[in-house]
Image (cartoon, rainbow, N blue to C red; front, side, top):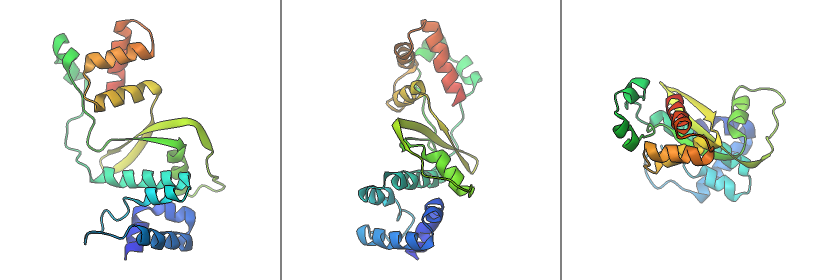
Length: 201
């Protein structure tokens, strides 16, 4: 039952390894991380850690990606989305001090391989898909949902800085200062960059 449940949580990983190898992995994982609760919903939460301990970083990243996508579906989608109208209703002073928040279903994940598009190719059963090479530097992706469909998009270095600042509770003025540091331009242009990123997200 646990092996079947794990296969449902990590379908692309199972497809890549094939059934026999995945079942062997599942049994080894069960030995290392036996469930501690009668509900098995979170049984696979340590699979990426287990795979990383076996020094297969790419498969660990694939497991991380699949687990995060599973979690996104279960998160609330009831918070209102930011629109230009919301910004227009804020005074200049109020906007300067305003803090923004990511939706509960958003995840920011850093990959050392280009794992998300590789997973897509595996899921679509594209022929001749090879393991992606190790990247020169980590690449950041935003994982999110719309209705009950999950998506991802890569983030630019500026977007990564701004997202991290938002998660740390920094306000609009702080975001503009970061944009100005990241790309020495005028303050007005920096503010416009931040607004553009916010509305794109």
